[in-house]
Image (cartoon, rainbow, N blue to C red; front, top):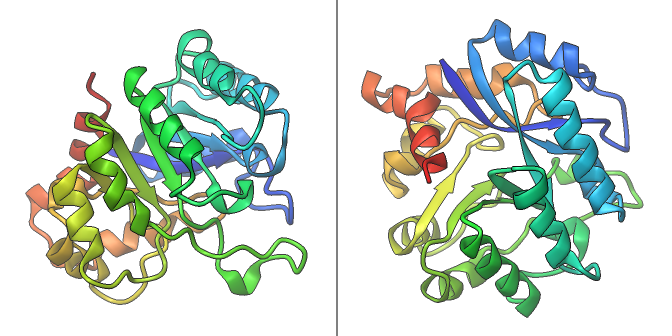
Length: 256
């Protein structure tokens, strides 16, 4: 069985997608053996009423998710009273984590507000997912062009936020200086491979990052689910490695 740590509900604001209705999304996931999917909301990328976004996400997962969808809320530290949004995610909506979109929300990872958000997430024992991209720059709308988030500042932050469980999603650009490996060895940092390209990409990824830090993430419905599945199947991995990527690592990450 698969735990998909990177799916979205609602509508991508720039075009309709196959799978952007929850029944269709669930049918696709179940057809490929997904037993749990961590769901963010496309509304969280551009909507400023974050509280309403998170309420809708939690309600959709509860009433339509058939026990498969696990909501991960939106928090935008550039908005006033973001601390209350974080509190509601954890206390009211019982979300195990949050998903951040710095490139769309207008902050860098060396911003003090981002650091404050990480510290509070640790206090609340919440997983933090960090989306470096949402789509290829070549397909972005001309009025909403954003660059990949620079992850270099995270290495300086990790010693200051012990206990942080961080998931880096949708990496496209290859960092220099073995940054990925340094991140994984200096903190509890995990990675998905939704935007990883090239034959044998996962096997090469494991050369930089320990295998117990790699998570299955499809970025469905913005990306084809089958693309993520094929990346695992075409890589020369042992059964133990595949099982860890498909579900074992994610299960351990969500343990309190």
